[in-house]
Image 1 (cartoon, rainbow over the protein chains, first blue to last red):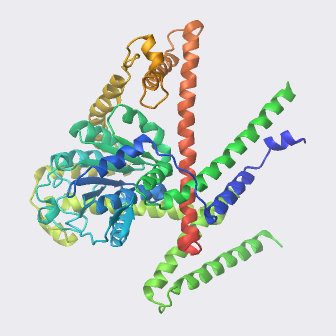
Image 2 (cartoon, each protein chain N blue to C red; image 1 turned 45 degrees about the vertical axis):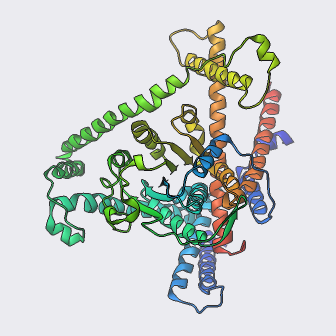
Image 3 (cartoon, helix red, strand yellow; image 1 turned 180 degrees about the vertical axis):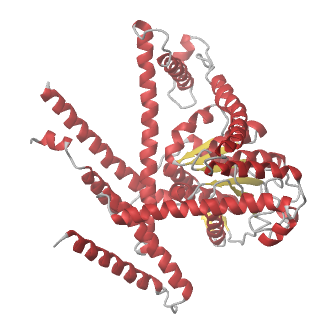
Length: 287
Length: 272
């Protein structure tokens, strides 16, 4: 058996082992890699930066723990940016395992915003964000399409009370806030077809500015909506999250993860090349 | 040494490691005294680490630890989904509108009696008739309702967002800011917002869409100019699939990064 035959019959467990080794080494060895900002991510950051104190944004935490690694960094970076700018945030989740994700994100960001921080040269003193004043978490309701349509009429139709059981009418932040007309934009973090529903039933019906943060697997499928202007920004996978963290000057797990991404991709590409060389040479030998 | 003895040794080693990890994690690192919350937290973190490693073990070969983790995941997911569905849909939406007694029983505030909420209740019961061999046909009424409403809603959805908007977006000008050949070459720039780049983008959209559609047109044999356009269409499709595959690989590596972060940071505490 020559080297090309060995290439063709390489046990796939060697590939797993190499990738695992590279991932572990690059994870524990701290170094930075350059991250290039794309227009579609910058559009979301710039949109939020231009908003005024007290404006309301709507964040959809539509993912489960299995997409946490990709989507948590995005929701953390955007929510923290919003709270630092004293925007008000409505959280909602249309994913069954989403309440835990949203609740964890709100608690962690609340702790982070208490600290004094400087982002992009601007000093932000720590402050306490309060439920009902700085944010509202509406909770979860099944059947995303119907909930999205219902919220377009009035948030109180699908959510008469928030996640913690407080009626929306008695929440100070929700005074005069009826539907999407009162929010500046909707940003949905999605790990499934909820993103389609936000585009079709939400943006298509009520015409609000919509941006998407999504898993890498979904990324390529949604660029046509960006080109058609149905969404104004898109963050695809950990790369999108890393770009946003860089824009917000708030490095986190996404930027950390990118160095692993780069070297894992190099290993995968090398194995693809090795496999193809083996295949081509073997085929030539067979005539 | 036979296989069953090896299995027993590995099992004892795994259980021992689990217990040791649980015990070590139970002691707070800040020097505080051990408490019930820290013991509980340590148990769940250790269990999550064990289950993560059990899932990874499938990369070597199928084994009982992987099977255990897989079945645990499926069982817990199904149970969680059922509980959430029951409490948010059945108890949260239906009960408060049909029965004060049941509202009191489930501890949810009674709203007002709404007659038409019996419609989904009846359809739900009909759906369960599927379990009966004799009355199974009744479930078709509920299924017909589901299929009908989904088709109706999706017809509008696809027509507006995935058809009209997308088709209109492919009607792009092939000559952008065109002031003649001389002006084009004298002001030539490769900038992202420049005339050349905008025109190139629009030509790629036009040719890509046109050739992609030709590839799926089977009423004419793919040869000659038509065949060449069809082959360009294949290339466009392959590039699209390649981009999707690249994103998919990135997504899967991201999940691995997430698990590594959990193992090294939350479980082993090595990174902080």
